[in-house]
Image (cartoon, rainbow, N blue to C red):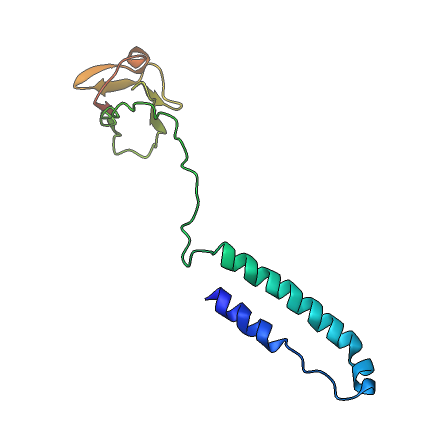
Amino acid sequence: MLLPMLKAVSKMLDYPTPNTAAEAELEKPFRIQVGCAKIILDEIITNLESNPIPENPKPVYKEKTQAAKPDLQPKATLEPKPEVETPPTDKEWFVTVSDKGDLFIQDFPEDGMVELDGVKMKYKDTVGKKFKKARIL
């Protein structure tokens, strides 16, 4: 499709010869420009005729080599977070459970009673013990 279009443009650049010498002198710069454009266009046409461009060239791309993916281990199922019940009193406690499962109650007295999984004990004895259910007594 490109080649026929270029040939049509080349035919359009054929400029008729002037009738008089005065016309030729006035049109001289324009004729030079048109003549140069026609020469360049004809060179492009002959080059395309000898080395045609495919109509729908396939895109060129490089295949990326991927590094070997590390073998991923399936995620371990997480244990459910322990539950902590507080007594219905006017006093509110800030209760947290660490990632290791330790109970921490802010500003709770060390001799205060806590029940871990049904076993009553002092708060200071709960350090380092894992539990599923805790209750402040």
